Each structure stands twice: as structure tokens, then as C-alpha cells.
Amino acid sequence: MTTTYVLVPGFWLGASVWRAVADALRQHGHVVHAVDLTGMGERAHLASPATDLSTHIDDVVRLLEEQDLHDVVLVGHSYGALVTTGAADRVPQRVARLVYVDTGPLPDGTAQADFGGPDARAADERLVMTDGDGWRLPPPPWAVLAADVPEVDDAAVAALVADSQPQPWRTGTEPVALTGAWQRLPRTGVLCTFGVAQVQEMAKHVPLFAHMVEGDWTYVELPTWHWPMVSRPAELAGVLAAAGR
Image (cartoon, rainbow, N blue to C red; front, side):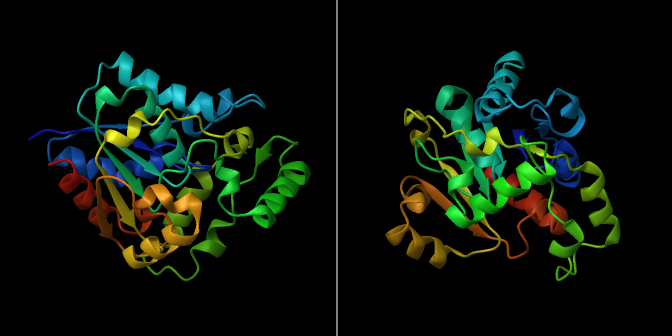
């Protein structure tokens, strides 16, 4: 069976981060659209201080409509979850399943910058002001993040550095606006830096995690760092292929 996948990256990265996963899915006959959101990847030249979460949701909705895609497995990594949830909320009739890669759907009215708490947000805002011209969040030190991840070699780090772009900060601060239409869709959580038990425990106490346990969920644990498309692409492709069946 051929399945159509739309792959949406998180902060700083474009479609190229999905290359190994997309290639593996295509080798099995699937149709894959990896997305360069506005201002990212090969569309970096389109970034502006006005680029926000709504811009990126519009990007994905436009792809689904212009390509007339249906029965899509819509995959979001990290911040990309806000984008995919927002897009599915707009056109749920085009989506068969939502997949969240080391992330989850945040509640209506929440911004990505809310997730890490006020101290992390303040630190990011300082970086935006000092190193991002007041409107962009610089990429992280990939080599430092990957230092303890044996599956991520120097070539992979170099690719992350080369493919990264500063993230327009309004994408992180604009709250997502949801009607709830997306909640009718089945969803898969691919858990890398935390497990099922942690999700269930956090959901009891942290409102931001509430949607991680409400609804039609299937969980798959894939232990690795936060970017499994880099560290374990073959395994992630297998999880996505299973989710599309």
C-alpha cells in the first residue's frame, strides 16, 4: 500500500534533515513531501521579522491543497508539531494520521516559547536580541549537543551546521489557535528523550502535556537524542511506515 507522508521539521532546520528518512520511505514505494517552511532550508531567503507560526501553518495547508493530498500521514518534529496540529485543525479531511516525533500537540493558545518555561524563554529572548538582530533565534551548538550521541558522527554534525538557519522568533512566540477539529484524528507519538510512563505522569500535573494522553494515541519508544531523523533514520522510517498502514 502506498502512503503519502508530509514531514515537517522543527526549529532551525529544513527539509534536508529528513533526507535519509524520506529516501527510506520512497524506497518502499511511498510518496514523501519534506517541507521547507518559510525562512528555513532552501527558503531561507524568505525569512522576515513578520514570519510567524501562522505563516508556517499556511505553508503546510497550501501544500496539502495545491497538491490535492488526501489520507496524509502528517509528521511533525519538535516545533513542527505546532505547525502540523494547526494545519490538521484547518483541513482535517485531508489527514489520515498525525505523528509527533519527540513532541506533542500543545493546547490552544500556547506558543512554542511557553514549553520550556519562563527562564528558558528569557534566555532565548536574550539570544534573539544579542545575536539574532532582534528577530531571529540562532541555531544551537550542534557539536556540543551531539557530543554524547555515538550515532551522530562529525559528518552528521557538519550537515546540521550547514543546513541550519536562525529561526524567526515570532514562530516561537505566536500562540497556536485551534478549533479542536484535529482532535478527531488518530495520532502516533514517537518518544525519544522520554518514555510512555513519563508522558503519562507529566500529563497528570502539567497542563501542556494534557493532549499527549487524551484521544486516540499509539506510542512508540525510540530511545535516542531529540533528532532521531539524524541519529536513527532507518528505525524512524520503519516507525513511520508502520504508522501509515
